[in-house]
Image 1 (tube, one colour):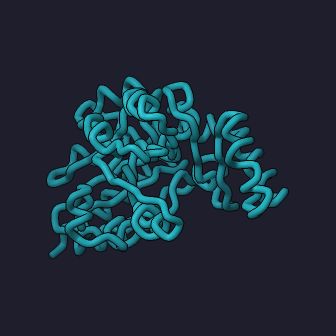
Image 2 (cartoon, helix red, strand yellow; image 1 turned 45 degrees about the vertical axis):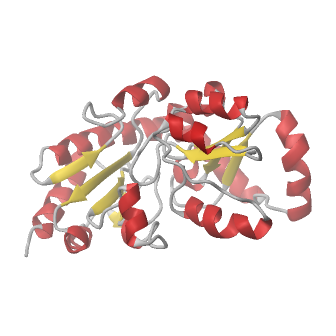
Amino acid sequence: AMFGSCLYVAQDLCPRFGIACTLVDGRDTAAWQRAVQPNTKAFFFETPANPTLDLVDIAAVSEIAHAAGSLVLVDNVFATPLMQKPLQLGADVVVYSATKHIDGQGRCLGGVVLCSDKFLKDHLHTFLRQTGPALSPFNAWVLLKGLETLPLRVRVQCETAARIADHLAAQPGLKVLFCGRPDYPQAALAKRQMTGPGTLVTFVLEGGKAAAFRFMNALRLIRISNNLGDAKSLITHPATTTHQRLKPEARAELGISDGMLRLSVGLEGYADLAADIDRALAASRIG
């Protein structure tokens, strides 16, 4: 179950190193079982997924993987370390872009790999030592300082995101996806494996790409950016940015339409964000 850059890695990069990948619909637990082959070494997925917020049942898929002798690697960026703990649900390795949420203030790039001592010794340590993908001391310090305020920042972002999702859902002609709403397609799974809804709200405008671009261009407070999990609210158009490498039919299969927008809710006041969104919605309906 891979999206965006992960699809590029699976389809273009991994084959260069002799690694074959099978893509599955991550929401379908049985599909993971059907995809297992004799040489399957690892299951990799992100949940919630970008940008559709689709979920993978971490515990169920981990059981399938371990029965097949495979490792489970989870990208946990959207849920953050606060709202989902994949290692406790059966995963073997968890990865983060620490730029999102952990720094969460637009200051530096970084990544995190969480794993057992055995995995570190058997796989990671030599690779890191010989190839050098290590943080600078300054970036490491910034990220550690970010961790000190992570719970406070994310809690407020989640609360505001929930209000924004409800506000959007009340507007005519909008489809809203938010892990914390009762009408979210996988609400039961979200409640079971997440302790909070996350800071991302995805919604689809009628009118496709033209309406989406009118919406974004009318924003004054929310900034257009592919980043997420920042103190500033950020919005992106997946079809022309994070998923532009995919063919239109591939995007359609993933449920990524030309009218879809992904909003990362920041720390601004709810009233200011709602006013910005209302102005943009009015502009998106012109023409």
